[in-house]
Length: 344
Image (tube, rainbow, N blue to C red; front, side, top):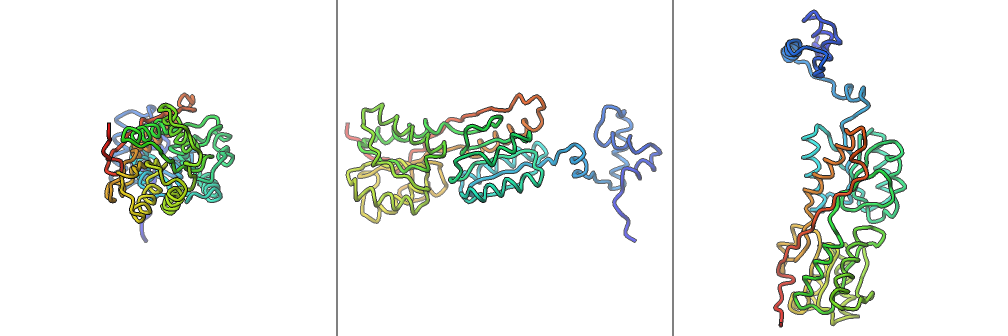
């Protein structure tokens, strides 16, 4: 018969000590001498003993598992944040369950319920475009399970933390860049206004215009889900109704690329006739023609910081790191789509 895996009882029998001492030694307890620990660890290795981490974690009411919810793993920003999350989680001894909402609220709600059922110790989430309330996330707060938002977040959920960039400042810098390049009439491709990040990007757009004495025109703000087709359609609508527009600030790169495709089809010269700035620094933004000026969001850093914050929330019993907001500074990456000659 095939011999089963060795247990702490077998180690105890061979060493002629009790099982509780073996258990404490394997858990590096201060109640066991260093000499005994070394004897137990050596014998455990000799016998091929492997700790049952699941049982150990359940005894501590801990699974050492973090749930991560993103809108789409195919987006470079979110894949970058996941890379940062996994690196930080691995370093802290945590496993990661990755789920995608595909921008659907009902899917996000089901994912959250499944993560709860799987007894995650905490959750990192960037909410979907359909999420306008954090009602489905209140369970975490009510049951003392740490929740940290990154990038897209919901306001009004006490006890939660978030890691974001300064979206208003990023938008301000994007529009300022277009103004410095000589643009006089700048349109904005906005995301759903119920999401804080798109509210703040619109806010930054408005503030930059105001600071340069340019009247805000709501007809130049086109709201959509910011897919490539949305950018294409928005550019078409813009050129039909406001052909004098000479600059576009898009709330993400995908919609900006859609606009580039339509404008090239129309025969518009980019950036000489119309300059474009996107947001998120997708890899394709560097290789399209013309290459796209954009805002870099530091996805890897956001993911790593968010995970570190969540782990501290899980491990810190006095809740000193709850309700924390970390805001990172954005970076403008200037490329060909806005590199127009300026007449001064």
